[in-house]
Image (cartoon, rainbow, N blue to C red; front, side, top):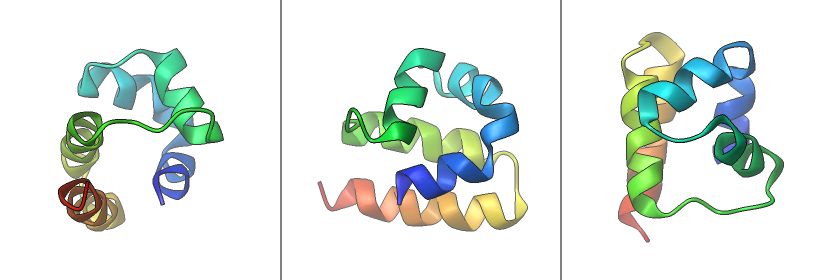
Length: 70
């Protein structure tokens, strides 16, 4: 799920990482499936995506629900 969301914002991945307060390297490793982010990071990514609106907001809501399951 997270990789799908991050693929949707690939051109602005650096901006999303900055807005979420995580490194670009970390977000790339999450996107590639090399690492799994903790729930707190998923929530920060969801908040950064939510600020962008539209379909990304819906995806952010799904991420938030996923983080709650952890």
